[in-house]
Amino acid sequence: MEENTPRVKVRVPVELRLEGSEVPIGGETSDISLGGCYIELMFTLAKDTKLDIARKIDGTVLALGTVVTCDPNAGNGIKFPKMLHEDQEELRCCLDAAQEASESST
Image (tube, rainbow, N blue to C red):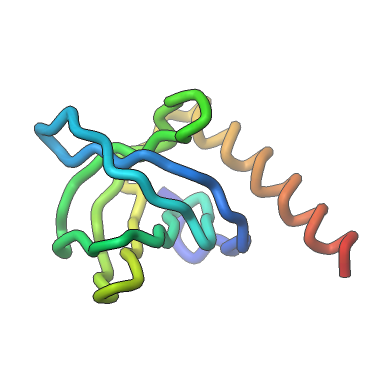
């Protein structure tokens, strides 16, 4: 995935599924980029945990993720080591739209 891509502050409800589990965990992004995101959770996940990240609205998988930071009682930084090209392009379009909306409101 792309390193050091600009992060866009955008709140998106997501469902996480830990590797090997079918039980969804609800969370919300506070920012997102092509390389990863920060997800706010009621509890945090251990560093190096592997998971699928899906939009809560339609269940579309955004990416496979790996936890890279753990902030107790706040959330986790997630890196996207793998993402399908079409999912990456869809995310790029969403990020561009969110960035434009943010800039036009200031």
